[in-house]
Image (cartoon, rainbow, N blue to C red; front, side):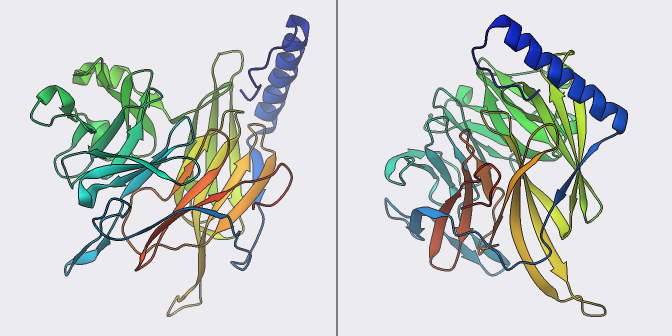
Length: 346
């Protein structure tokens, strides 16, 4: 599952695979491997590097902000990172997608024709898709003429997509995640798939990379998450990882793999005071980098700076860079973090 796709002589490759299979079998016999996330405080926040800073507004280099009496402030609802490291911000208030290069320079703006979108995905070929998962339950191709129905699609009416939680594009097929547990193919070759095809094509978990086919995360109580790692072939098998946190887990915020097959689990952690008030004593986002055999590579704690509502606050790029969207009353910023092998994050 986690063998990197490197060019090795045939004998060496078989030897590495044999060692991996033995490790998986040993883990299976011993039960799920346990990964303990250290830390019982919220005092050691990583600094990171600010790569984008934008003020709220309607200008060419700004991000829209909506304030209404009945709900909290709404800003950029989501973002994603392209294969080349470009950052795409869903600026749905201004009905557009803002594109920044890896150095944080704005390089493009694409209209989306809707202020309802809450999710964004970019294909390896550069096409940008946005989705409204709640009200209209539609997907649009950014920049396309919305009067042309071929460029917008309705989500199929299947049970698993009652809660649409994420959007990805793989080899020209648009996938929608339902309830953080399964992915459903919904669009292929520009056409909406039938409900039967959607259900038959459903797969478990998030798409993996390298020799990992998929990975799932299920929260178990307030201090534990079970990771399921599936290999790309029957020979590579599957393994469960039991991730235990010394701090309470409120939610799973992100789950991803990088190009080398390392797993990134992002959690929102918190600590409450004693009853009867249960005051919030601390909180943060924490991203753990884990090998598929359960080895903890490193951990990064980042501050919970969330002024506006949003669907996605953490994204892991293919090179392993962790991006966090932080918001305050003045605007937003994107901070990049890296986890060196065997060390703490920067």
